[in-house]
Length: 385
Figure 1: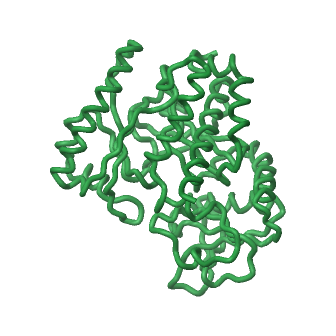
Figure 2: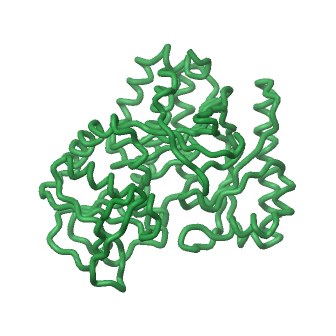
Figure 3: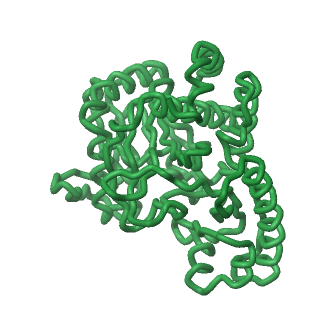
């Protein structure tokens, strides 16, 4: 048994009791990215609009169908006709494969699913080829009628469109879950408080299961004064991480990730190995941190402790992605990249692999941390209701 998982495994009844007391009204679905360094393990990202259902192993898809059936019953969806409202990624063939598989899974739960996108300039359905050469039909949302609910697979980075703000049917997840209102820093603040509660019960250090972080409002990463402010915060964060490394005799150098505090798809992320790098960021790095999805300017940055990954799969650095539908963990997969263990893996060149070879105790710890992250997300959504 791994040392990091030991406290959770040996106290499993207490951990499960705590979790079960908090697993109420969890997000409709979610994906959680987790990095394992050997000396610590932590959730590093949480997404309420997961886009990798095509990467789930076929063995997990039966339980996924059952989970969707239970979840939609929970939301009291009485009709059978659902609209799956997706990101406007008509050229991203792997995203198209994700929504094809997602639609198939929901349809297998005895619902009829129409794929749709926000395409205000089009009145005609379009056909697209997915990465596996499957044909799907996408309908402009404004042309649809007679549906019983909307399932969102769109993170609404640019806000809530009028067509959704005035919808008369249930929208799942809530439009409030979009990145127009969520903050990663708020999520991790809540999640870290939950981890502290569990760690106290298990008499372990919560740092071993979470990340240190700070957040900064900036004018622009291209602004020298903004970079100076970021540098000061980074110096303090590096010092705090080094203090924990010294406590545990970890003979590595701390590092951090600069991330947009709102956003997804691995955009707006930069690895920082030393605080002074912030003062001398080149044009390419500044461009990475200046705009996020839909070219939205980044004016709020999360400074997050970096967790090196010791997991290797198919000869590549790996991090686990755990998927859930409400209370049910439906499986997961590895995100893989040829980058070394301290880098961002969620970028061009990534591939995916099965998670089945992960030791049982370590996998259960991944699932537990993912569930804690989902409880934190539920608390987030309740606060902005």
